[in-house]
Image (cartoon, rainbow, N blue to C red; front, side, top):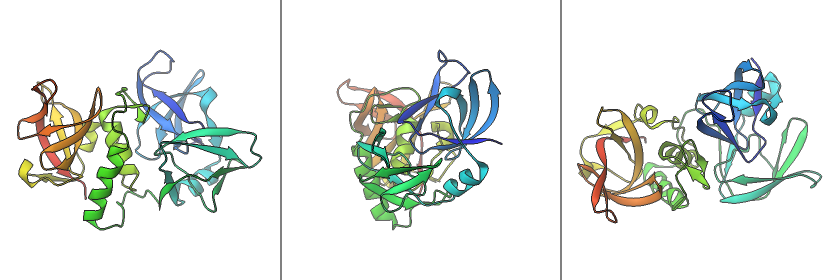
Length: 269
């Protein structure tokens, strides 16, 4: 099975093999993937980080050998922490802007070797992590505190369906990126994330870093946000914002009404 890596800033992954199709997620720089199917000028991919599938334009694909894919996937992988920073090739002739949460597989001594090129990065990083499905080794209290700090970096970022960057992201993409910054793998969609972690029985028992999930009239989980204390939640609805949470759901003070109905709360760590 062929493999590839994203060497661009932000690349759309679509539901169907067409530029007009819905964007279901995005690749950020350093994201690895397997290619499972080809249709004309489109490749169906499965992302290494979360197994999410979608279609990628062949013009935006950088192939890697199976050996290099396994080496990069198994390497320590720092994550970029600057909202936007520049990454360049060793010659300095080619530069790529990278956004917070981008991956630097195999990064060491301010550089990494990918597809016969050496990339240099001198910005702030978090990690390194191996992204083997295990959470950060830091103790739980510090982990929750850092999750809150990281979430606040995205405050006021606009809502974009399928987005994963500070220039636009959706509710589950926001949560996935916040946890990724601390080396924890969340799945891509809110309904998938709701299958992870342990249930918290009462809102009053919730702690910072717990995820709250919300459903629609049919009982489908359609929204997720993160508790920053027992009655405040940061989530992406229109933009990344902070609202009040109680046993009924999210209360928007500006609108003076409930906007999301609470389904359950899960603790990931």
